[in-house]
Image (cartoon, rainbow, N blue to C red):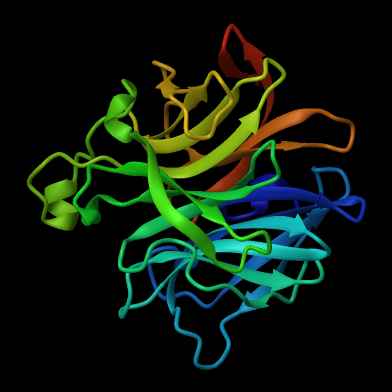
Length: 294
């Protein structure tokens, strides 16, 4: 199977056991009831096998919708699938599932990692230079904010979060991001609201910490921009690159490095239900910005 035959949103890739494993949100159930996550497996990033279901909703499991953005992290012999999960009883939030293998089966594992009672999504695990794991996630506008990127410390075994959350930045700080144009139509909201989602963090060769993240862009479509922490500190200060890195009709991406040491950025494109598929771009850092090669 080729990349353009794979229909997922929010692609996430890891290397394990000499192969590549790619996870993502099932397009067909993105906006409806959900019951699981899949992965695709490749030896060369060109031909893929799958989908293989790596998690299926157990009987009585609380989450029955919003199965979004699974990201796989290996730590101390276990693989953790950190994902957004939702139900009608609780605001959506981020949780960790666990397995001994990258292709599962994964089982429910952690407590809620994002704050109780707060609508949060798209958590990504970032381990800092001291070895401390953090969850970076989007705090939705429904919580009385315009759309923030937040963080919280995680326990070493990713079983729960520690301490209080903190805000990295407000989406409105980015010149490329614009208020969501259908706020009234879709959410019944009169004021300006912004989206933050799909964070991915990477220290580049210049020693700075870069974060790609998605929002509604100035060309009135889903887009990806870049924030930079010049001192490489997770708590910033963060500055926003003025122009979007991927300005039109694609989003929620991540960096990965192949077995030859080449870095890529993958995201889903186009941003259209049942037509999304992963695309790969070689990455170059030039003059403090991230350039995607064709």
